[in-house]
Amino acid sequence: MKLTVQLKVSRKTNKAKLLFLEELYGKYQTALKLFYNYAKDNQLHRLGKRSLIEKELQKLYYAVKESLNLHSQLVQSARRDVVNDIMSWLKVGGEYPKLLEKPLTLVYDRSYRLFEHGKEFKLWAKICGVAYPLELGDTQLGLIKKAEKIGEAKLLKRDDEWYLHVSIEVKEAEPLNPKGVLGVDLGLRNSAVVTGSKPVFIKHRRLLYRVSYYWKKIDLLKSKLPKGQRTSKRIKRLWRKIARINRFIAHDTSAKIVKLALKTQKAIALEKLEVPNSGYNREWSRRLSNWVRGKIIKYVQYKAKLNGIPVILVNPAHTSRECHVCGGDGERFSSTFKCKVCGRTYNADFNASVNIARRATSLLARRRNPASVGLRDDGRKLPIFSGE
Image (tube, rainbow, N blue to C red; front, side, top):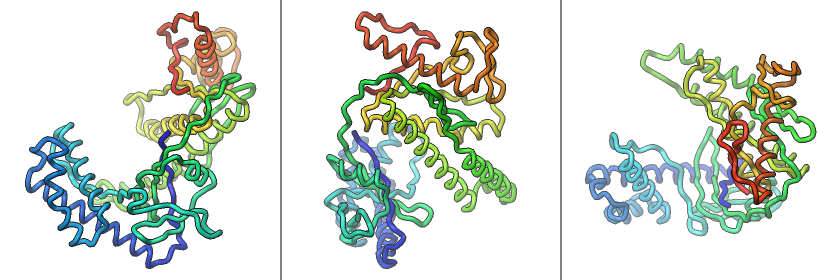
């Protein structure tokens, strides 16, 4: 199983070493420009094939390496990045691709390696001959230690901090034989409601209020921009803060869901969610765009896979409109669900999570019965299974 582990270069790093990273990063961007301009000026895209374009750009290799005094592997990575951009553009067409700033691509045991040293820092990275202390948690360290293979790394700078995104391959856990299903409903008021024997509400209200505050600041700053200008450094900084909050909510929610599944030895059931593209006012669209359901589902899937927990994605149709007791249609009023048939009222997210769990339980029962003849194409009965 392939994963990417984010490692942060410590702030306690020697300033001279940090300047070396700045210099290395700048040289890499220059190498990209040299390969890009050569490819554009000589219209190498007309060659059509990756191998031919790479062969032509290779003629520039020694000149770039010697003029920039750059590690040979980084020169080759810069060349490959430019070729990848050209090949992607040839598939989609349109205007010639613009050259964007790219992270450094490092190859393990060539331009970087990881090692343990001392007591203050759990892990170090040696990048082009210079050692850097890394900040990471126990989970990240455990993944690095369990890795069967350590691959390429991307070195990038974000908010004046350096990060190393390391690709690894880890062995998957033995599949769990679930004793039941946890139904998970992802929402706006609650990040998740998890229902097994009793509901568990996962909330991040304060963080969502913080996001709303950032939105208001962004709107205020946009109103003060000169005509024709769409953004600014301050606005970009605020969007990065929102993105960080989203990532934290997704990681925290997914970790709690998987932890509960491990504790109860149950499979995880989630909706295969699709958000409509139109029909919402601006504020509602914003809230949906901030709703990190997609990230949570993605993180739950890979964290569950690491622990051998099955994840079931069910069809979302009617989970919020169906009463989990009598099966009748109902209505949702804010956070409350009321059944039109039996008159019962429940927390709407809890009601949906029970319906999700039941659909997944039905699927598991059918999978265990070889005589079962598939599932009808019905929103109430057709789950989609993802992973084992």
